[in-house]
Image (cartoon, rainbow, N blue to C red; front, side, top):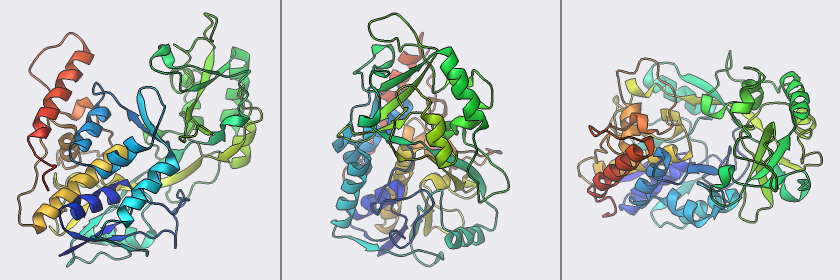
Length: 434
């Protein structure tokens, strides 16, 4: 028996790996390099098109818990992420190219995975299929999915941040420091005075935008909002968001800048840095002009400008069960951001669940029910909760994990308990036993 998996992003690669590791043959469809979406540039699989950060490491954070659960399920994405980690304080960030290259190598070398370098355009309801085509699904497949479900999409817009070279950053004006000195000083900080910030702010909110295609109006997901959109909400909004200066005193002084732009390492060599929180859809020339006003970036070399693109997702609570299987046809599963999970790790997690359960179905085994007490299960149940009336993309949070009856003085203690409970439950699922 063979499974078609559509899309070699994080979710598709994870789903393919989980199926193949359980002895199921996989045809992995990937339209690159014949055809690229507006956001993709590399021929490699699992391309990270936004940030290179996979977010928090620690178990006091829900995404840190999700990553640990995935490790315990022998996740390909987590194996490759851990192998290509770059310094990022309390976050797990990866060498962007090294990570996708390693995923690509492992997928291509698996004896049960066959790569089909072509665009998958039409759902075949007679074939076992996992659709992980992502939020930038091609037009033909988009139409086929719409026809399959018989209802319209929801949509939102996503944005990617610019990347600059380390050698072009003026370190006489910038400095390395971790916020509150927690962890290693892995971030480069560009401080602004009040006058510098106000000049920058005025240019930012008046800069010319690139045209946005694909929808009648712009709907922005709060977790990946363009910096200029955030700025237009009020003059001080950025000061409580990506330009927050607290905990970033200038070394050798007690002086806290008025605003701080942070840069995070984007590759293992430390030669590239991305602008934290600076997702944007300004025109490229405007990005160069406005962002060069930031102290330390006057001569910055931009190796990638920010881009804005359409992200689409299905109304999963009416269409999928908690195994990412469609209610309409048990042979068809979905995975990744198209299901309404938001974030790299969440997408890979959905691919893991879909791959495990597709394989179990073909092997005549019971589906794995991931309990709501786990981070993995909380996402499964969120996207399949038919009581949700206004479905929107969701990152994993402790807020969607089943609460505890115990009372805790501090949030950190509560989160630590929930993580401990989740991992104990997750271990009992024995997911490493193929």
